[in-house]
Amino acid sequence: MSATNVTHDSPTRGPARPLPYVISGILLLAAVVMPLAVPMYAHADPPLFGFPFFFWYQMLWVPICAILIGICYKLMTAEDRRRRAVARDQAGRKGRHDAGGGAR
Picture 1 (cartoon, rainbow, N blue to C red):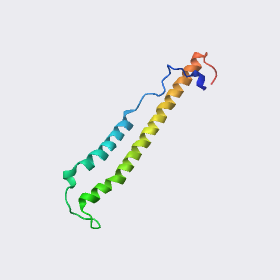
Picture 2: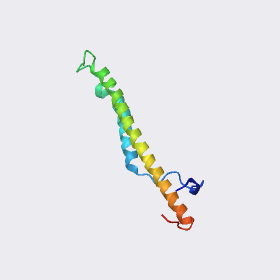
Picture 3: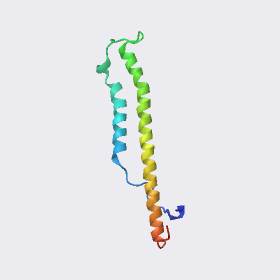
Picture 4: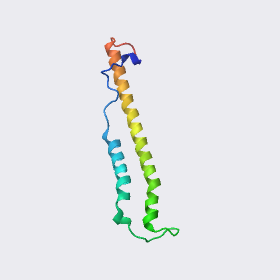
């Protein structure tokens, strides 16, 4: 398979699967909504190492959000790689058939 089979009209990505996008959206939504739901954690009890719940709960979400965003990044890059491979395979098959169906 060579790059000469790819034209400007060739798609750069194959069809998308919705599941990775849905999972990423839900994870990002949780990372945004939970820290913004202030009435849920606007109290002092239970304290942790002398810090009121209000403060340590917010600080707990910093590494949680980093982990959630990392998971979303991995999901999206894997999906992008898959879609690019599908487009590359489709372009390669078109190129073989257009060239007279060469030997595999």
